[in-house]
Length: 333
Image 1 (cartoon, rainbow, N blue to C red):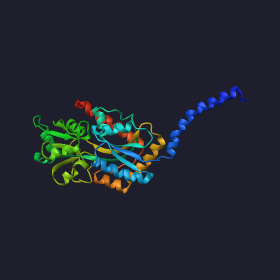
Image 2 (cartoon, one colour):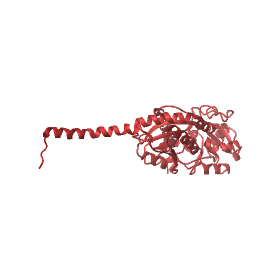
Image 3 (tube, rainbow, N blue to C red):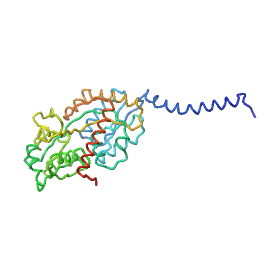
Image 4 (spheres, rainbow, N blue to C red):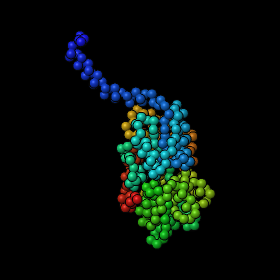
Protein backbone atom coordinates (compact mmCIF):
# COMPACT_ATOMS: atom_id res chain seq x y z
CA UNK A 1 0.00 0.00 0.00
CA UNK A 2 1.30 3.46 -0.90
CA UNK A 3 1.79 5.85 1.99
CA UNK A 4 1.35 9.58 1.67
CA UNK A 5 4.30 11.76 2.49
CA UNK A 6 1.90 14.45 3.80
CA UNK A 7 1.45 14.50 7.55
CA UNK A 8 -2.00 13.38 8.68
CA UNK A 9 -2.59 16.76 10.38
CA UNK A 10 -2.04 18.61 7.08
CA UNK A 11 -4.36 16.23 5.21
CA UNK A 12 -7.15 16.73 7.76
CA UNK A 13 -6.67 20.50 7.66
CA UNK A 14 -7.00 20.44 3.90
CA UNK A 15 -10.19 18.42 4.06
CA UNK A 16 -11.61 20.82 6.62
CA UNK A 17 -10.78 23.72 4.36
CA UNK A 18 -12.63 22.08 1.48
CA UNK A 19 -15.63 21.47 3.72
CA UNK A 20 -15.68 25.05 4.91
CA UNK A 21 -15.37 26.18 1.32
CA UNK A 22 -18.64 24.54 0.25
CA UNK A 23 -20.91 27.14 1.97
CA UNK A 24 -18.63 29.86 0.64
CA UNK A 25 -19.07 28.62 -2.91
CA UNK A 26 -22.83 28.33 -2.37
CA UNK A 27 -22.96 31.89 -1.10
CA UNK A 28 -21.01 33.06 -4.12
CA UNK A 29 -23.41 31.34 -6.57
CA UNK A 30 -26.23 33.95 -6.39
CA UNK A 31 -23.75 36.77 -6.91
CA UNK A 32 -22.26 35.01 -9.91
CA UNK A 33 -25.76 34.34 -11.27
CA UNK A 34 -26.62 38.02 -10.88
CA UNK A 35 -23.46 39.11 -12.69
CA UNK A 36 -24.51 37.48 -15.96
CA UNK A 37 -28.27 37.98 -15.51
CA UNK A 38 -30.18 37.52 -17.72
CA UNK A 39 -28.47 34.79 -19.70
CA UNK A 40 -31.66 33.37 -21.24
CA UNK A 41 -35.33 34.41 -21.82
CA UNK A 42 -37.52 35.57 -18.93
CA UNK A 43 -41.14 34.49 -18.42
CA UNK A 44 -43.59 37.18 -17.30
CA UNK A 45 -46.70 35.44 -15.93
CA UNK A 46 -49.98 37.31 -16.36
CA UNK A 47 -52.55 35.68 -14.04
CA UNK A 48 -55.47 36.55 -16.31
CA UNK A 49 -56.70 35.56 -19.76
CA UNK A 50 -55.11 37.05 -22.86
CA UNK A 51 -56.70 40.07 -24.51
CA UNK A 52 -57.72 42.19 -21.53
CA UNK A 53 -56.38 45.53 -20.37
CA UNK A 54 -53.93 43.98 -17.90
CA UNK A 55 -52.60 41.67 -20.59
CA UNK A 56 -52.08 44.59 -22.99
CA UNK A 57 -50.06 46.57 -20.44
CA UNK A 58 -48.00 43.48 -19.60
CA UNK A 59 -47.16 42.86 -23.27
CA UNK A 60 -46.04 46.44 -23.81
CA UNK A 61 -43.88 46.17 -20.69
CA UNK A 62 -42.43 42.85 -21.86
CA UNK A 63 -41.49 44.32 -25.24
CA UNK A 64 -39.82 47.36 -23.70
CA UNK A 65 -38.11 45.35 -20.97
CA UNK A 66 -36.70 42.92 -23.53
CA UNK A 67 -35.10 45.79 -25.41
CA UNK A 68 -33.39 46.98 -22.24
CA UNK A 69 -32.26 43.56 -21.01
CA UNK A 70 -31.18 42.21 -24.37
CA UNK A 71 -33.17 39.01 -23.79
CA UNK A 72 -36.68 37.92 -24.71
CA UNK A 73 -39.41 38.48 -22.14
CA UNK A 74 -42.18 36.00 -22.89
CA UNK A 75 -45.69 36.68 -21.60
CA UNK A 76 -47.44 33.55 -20.31
CA UNK A 77 -51.15 33.84 -19.46
CA UNK A 78 -52.20 31.65 -16.53
CA UNK A 79 -55.76 32.70 -15.75
CA UNK A 80 -58.10 31.25 -13.15
CA UNK A 81 -58.89 31.60 -9.49
CA UNK A 82 -59.15 35.38 -9.73
CA UNK A 83 -55.42 35.52 -10.47
CA UNK A 84 -54.46 32.99 -7.78
CA UNK A 85 -53.32 30.26 -10.19
CA UNK A 86 -50.76 32.41 -11.98
CA UNK A 87 -49.59 33.98 -8.74
CA UNK A 88 -49.12 30.54 -7.19
CA UNK A 89 -47.07 29.43 -10.19
CA UNK A 90 -44.62 32.29 -9.66
CA UNK A 91 -44.55 31.97 -5.87
CA UNK A 92 -43.37 28.38 -6.24
CA UNK A 93 -40.96 28.97 -9.12
CA UNK A 94 -37.17 28.89 -8.80
CA UNK A 95 -36.02 32.23 -7.31
CA UNK A 96 -33.56 33.07 -10.05
CA UNK A 97 -35.22 36.04 -11.76
CA UNK A 98 -36.42 34.09 -14.78
CA UNK A 99 -40.07 33.71 -13.72
CA UNK A 100 -41.82 36.96 -12.78
CA UNK A 101 -45.40 37.90 -11.89
CA UNK A 102 -47.30 40.78 -13.48
CA UNK A 103 -49.63 41.50 -10.58
CA UNK A 104 -52.61 43.76 -10.04
CA UNK A 105 -54.34 44.98 -6.89
CA UNK A 106 -56.44 41.80 -6.97
CA UNK A 107 -53.38 39.99 -5.57
CA UNK A 108 -53.99 41.90 -2.33
CA UNK A 109 -57.80 41.96 -2.32
CA UNK A 110 -57.88 38.18 -2.80
CA UNK A 111 -55.60 37.73 0.19
CA UNK A 112 -57.63 40.14 2.31
CA UNK A 113 -60.87 38.35 1.46
CA UNK A 114 -59.41 34.97 2.36
CA UNK A 115 -59.38 33.42 -1.11
CA UNK A 116 -57.68 30.03 -0.79
CA UNK A 117 -54.16 30.13 -2.24
CA UNK A 118 -50.90 28.20 -1.98
CA UNK A 119 -48.88 31.33 -1.24
CA UNK A 120 -48.63 34.24 1.19
CA UNK A 121 -48.62 37.71 -0.38
CA UNK A 122 -46.15 39.09 2.17
CA UNK A 123 -43.84 36.06 2.41
CA UNK A 124 -43.90 34.29 -0.96
CA UNK A 125 -42.83 37.18 -3.20
CA UNK A 126 -39.97 39.61 -3.58
CA UNK A 127 -41.38 42.99 -4.68
CA UNK A 128 -39.63 44.49 -7.72
CA UNK A 129 -41.51 47.59 -8.83
CA UNK A 130 -44.89 49.29 -8.89
CA UNK A 131 -45.60 50.17 -12.51
CA UNK A 132 -48.63 52.45 -12.40
CA UNK A 133 -51.93 53.32 -10.74
CA UNK A 134 -55.37 54.12 -12.07
CA UNK A 135 -58.87 54.78 -10.67
CA UNK A 136 -61.98 52.68 -10.88
CA UNK A 137 -65.09 54.07 -12.58
CA UNK A 138 -68.45 53.89 -10.81
CA UNK A 139 -70.97 53.15 -13.55
CA UNK A 140 -74.66 52.27 -13.60
CA UNK A 141 -76.90 50.45 -16.05
CA UNK A 142 -78.86 52.78 -18.31
CA UNK A 143 -82.23 51.48 -17.16
CA UNK A 144 -81.59 52.86 -13.62
CA UNK A 145 -81.47 56.45 -14.89
CA UNK A 146 -78.89 57.42 -12.26
CA UNK A 147 -76.77 60.48 -12.98
CA UNK A 148 -74.72 60.99 -9.80
CA UNK A 149 -73.41 59.44 -6.60
CA UNK A 150 -76.22 61.30 -4.80
CA UNK A 151 -78.75 59.45 -6.96
CA UNK A 152 -77.03 56.16 -6.19
CA UNK A 153 -77.00 56.83 -2.46
CA UNK A 154 -80.66 57.76 -2.43
CA UNK A 155 -81.60 54.57 -4.23
CA UNK A 156 -79.27 52.40 -2.15
CA UNK A 157 -80.41 53.93 1.15
CA UNK A 158 -83.72 52.13 0.83
CA UNK A 159 -83.55 48.63 2.35
CA UNK A 160 -86.16 47.48 -0.15
CA UNK A 161 -84.46 49.27 -3.06
CA UNK A 162 -83.44 45.90 -4.55
CA UNK A 163 -80.14 47.32 -5.80
CA UNK A 164 -77.13 45.19 -6.71
CA UNK A 165 -73.56 45.63 -7.91
CA UNK A 166 -71.46 43.25 -9.96
CA UNK A 167 -67.80 42.29 -9.85
CA UNK A 168 -65.19 40.15 -11.58
CA UNK A 169 -65.46 37.70 -8.69
CA UNK A 170 -65.41 37.31 -4.93
CA UNK A 171 -62.40 39.09 -3.48
CA UNK A 172 -61.77 41.24 -6.56
CA UNK A 173 -61.05 44.97 -6.40
CA UNK A 174 -64.55 45.58 -7.82
CA UNK A 175 -66.11 43.52 -5.05
CA UNK A 176 -64.30 45.12 -2.12
CA UNK A 177 -64.66 48.65 -3.53
CA UNK A 178 -68.42 48.14 -3.58
CA UNK A 179 -68.35 46.86 -0.03
CA UNK A 180 -66.30 49.86 1.09
CA UNK A 181 -68.80 52.20 -0.56
CA UNK A 182 -71.67 50.50 1.28
CA UNK A 183 -69.85 50.81 4.61
CA UNK A 184 -68.98 54.48 4.17
CA UNK A 185 -72.47 55.47 3.00
CA UNK A 186 -74.53 53.07 5.14
CA UNK A 187 -76.37 51.86 2.07
CA UNK A 188 -77.68 48.54 0.81
CA UNK A 189 -76.53 46.74 -2.33
CA UNK A 190 -76.32 43.03 -3.05
CA UNK A 191 -73.04 41.75 -4.46
CA UNK A 192 -73.29 39.66 -7.64
CA UNK A 193 -69.95 37.99 -8.48
CA UNK A 194 -69.00 36.83 -11.98
CA UNK A 195 -66.12 34.79 -13.35
CA UNK A 196 -64.35 37.78 -14.83
CA UNK A 197 -65.14 41.34 -15.83
CA UNK A 198 -66.31 40.35 -19.31
CA UNK A 199 -69.45 38.47 -18.23
CA UNK A 200 -70.17 41.14 -15.61
CA UNK A 201 -70.06 43.84 -18.28
CA UNK A 202 -72.36 41.88 -20.57
CA UNK A 203 -75.03 41.61 -17.88
CA UNK A 204 -74.58 45.26 -16.87
CA UNK A 205 -75.26 46.35 -20.45
CA UNK A 206 -78.32 44.11 -20.54
CA UNK A 207 -79.64 45.60 -17.30
CA UNK A 208 -79.47 42.31 -15.43
CA UNK A 209 -77.10 43.89 -12.88
CA UNK A 210 -77.08 47.52 -11.98
CA UNK A 211 -73.83 49.04 -10.64
CA UNK A 212 -70.18 48.29 -11.35
CA UNK A 213 -67.03 49.63 -9.68
CA UNK A 214 -65.04 48.84 -12.79
CA UNK A 215 -61.44 49.17 -13.85
CA UNK A 216 -60.98 51.68 -16.67
CA UNK A 217 -59.77 49.17 -19.32
CA UNK A 218 -62.87 47.04 -18.74
CA UNK A 219 -65.56 49.68 -19.13
CA UNK A 220 -63.97 52.57 -21.06
CA UNK A 221 -65.43 51.64 -24.49
CA UNK A 222 -68.94 51.39 -23.03
CA UNK A 223 -68.56 54.75 -21.26
CA UNK A 224 -67.40 56.43 -24.45
CA UNK A 225 -70.33 54.93 -26.36
CA UNK A 226 -72.77 56.12 -23.65
CA UNK A 227 -73.96 52.57 -23.04
CA UNK A 228 -73.61 53.02 -19.27
CA UNK A 229 -73.88 56.07 -17.02
CA UNK A 230 -70.61 57.22 -15.44
CA UNK A 231 -71.25 58.54 -11.93
CA UNK A 232 -67.78 59.14 -10.47
CA UNK A 233 -64.14 58.05 -10.29
CA UNK A 234 -62.75 56.44 -7.16
CA UNK A 235 -59.32 58.10 -6.96
CA UNK A 236 -58.31 61.09 -4.86
CA UNK A 237 -58.17 63.34 -7.91
CA UNK A 238 -60.21 63.49 -11.10
CA UNK A 239 -59.21 61.43 -14.10
CA UNK A 240 -57.63 63.24 -17.07
CA UNK A 241 -59.88 61.07 -19.25
CA UNK A 242 -63.00 62.55 -17.60
CA UNK A 243 -62.08 65.95 -16.13
CA UNK A 244 -65.75 66.90 -15.68
CA UNK A 245 -66.61 63.77 -13.68
CA UNK A 246 -66.27 64.17 -9.88
CA UNK A 247 -64.46 61.84 -7.55
CA UNK A 248 -66.50 59.80 -5.08
CA UNK A 249 -65.03 61.94 -2.31
CA UNK A 250 -66.06 65.16 -4.07
CA UNK A 251 -69.51 63.67 -4.36
CA UNK A 252 -69.80 63.53 -0.58
CA UNK A 253 -68.18 60.25 0.53
CA UNK A 254 -65.24 61.17 2.81
CA UNK A 255 -61.86 59.43 2.62
CA UNK A 256 -62.80 57.37 -0.42
CA UNK A 257 -59.58 56.94 -2.39
CA UNK A 258 -59.33 53.67 -4.30
CA UNK A 259 -57.11 52.81 -7.21
CA UNK A 260 -56.03 49.70 -9.01
CA UNK A 261 -52.36 49.14 -9.78
CA UNK A 262 -49.96 47.03 -11.80
CA UNK A 263 -46.66 45.70 -10.48
CA UNK A 264 -43.90 43.15 -11.05
CA UNK A 265 -42.84 40.63 -8.40
CA UNK A 266 -40.42 37.70 -8.21
CA UNK A 267 -40.41 34.59 -6.02
CA UNK A 268 -39.14 35.16 -2.49
CA UNK A 269 -35.43 34.42 -2.20
CA UNK A 270 -34.49 35.96 -5.53
CA UNK A 271 -30.98 37.49 -5.16
CA UNK A 272 -31.08 41.16 -4.22
CA UNK A 273 -28.72 42.08 -7.05
CA UNK A 274 -31.25 40.72 -9.56
CA UNK A 275 -34.13 42.51 -7.81
CA UNK A 276 -32.21 45.78 -7.95
CA UNK A 277 -31.39 45.38 -11.63
CA UNK A 278 -34.98 44.53 -12.52
CA UNK A 279 -36.26 47.46 -10.46
CA UNK A 280 -34.10 49.85 -12.43
CA UNK A 281 -35.15 48.38 -15.78
CA UNK A 282 -38.88 48.12 -14.96
CA UNK A 283 -38.89 51.75 -13.80
CA UNK A 284 -37.22 52.77 -17.05
CA UNK A 285 -39.65 50.67 -19.09
CA UNK A 286 -42.65 52.23 -17.33
CA UNK A 287 -41.34 55.67 -18.29
CA UNK A 288 -40.80 54.61 -21.89
CA UNK A 289 -43.20 56.14 -24.40
CA UNK A 290 -44.87 52.82 -25.31
CA UNK A 291 -45.78 51.80 -21.74
CA UNK A 292 -46.43 55.32 -20.46
CA UNK A 293 -48.87 55.95 -23.32
CA UNK A 294 -50.60 52.62 -22.69
CA UNK A 295 -51.08 53.54 -19.04
CA UNK A 296 -52.33 56.99 -20.02
CA UNK A 297 -54.83 55.44 -22.44
CA UNK A 298 -56.08 53.28 -19.57
CA UNK A 299 -56.59 56.35 -17.38
CA UNK A 300 -53.55 55.53 -15.26
CA UNK A 301 -50.24 57.16 -14.40
CA UNK A 302 -46.79 55.60 -14.48
CA UNK A 303 -45.01 55.15 -11.16
CA UNK A 304 -41.29 54.95 -10.41
CA UNK A 305 -39.85 53.83 -7.11
CA UNK A 306 -37.75 51.27 -5.22
CA UNK A 307 -38.89 47.75 -4.31
CA UNK A 308 -39.66 49.03 -0.81
CA UNK A 309 -42.39 51.29 -2.24
CA UNK A 310 -44.20 48.25 -3.63
CA UNK A 311 -43.73 46.35 -0.37
CA UNK A 312 -45.27 49.29 1.50
CA UNK A 313 -48.24 49.30 -0.91
CA UNK A 314 -48.85 45.59 -0.37
CA UNK A 315 -48.72 45.96 3.42
CA UNK A 316 -50.91 49.07 3.66
CA UNK A 317 -53.58 47.81 1.26
CA UNK A 318 -53.77 44.43 2.96
CA UNK A 319 -54.55 46.28 6.18
CA UNK A 320 -57.25 48.43 4.52
CA UNK A 321 -59.00 45.59 2.73
CA UNK A 322 -58.84 43.22 5.69
CA UNK A 323 -60.61 45.91 7.66
CA UNK A 324 -63.35 46.10 5.02
CA UNK A 325 -63.74 42.32 4.99
CA UNK A 326 -63.90 42.11 8.76
CA UNK A 327 -66.38 44.97 9.14
CA UNK A 328 -68.60 43.58 6.42
CA UNK A 329 -68.45 40.03 7.75
CA UNK A 330 -67.56 38.88 4.26
CA UNK A 331 -67.22 35.10 3.93
CA UNK A 332 -65.76 33.42 0.86
CA UNK A 333 -67.68 30.43 -0.42
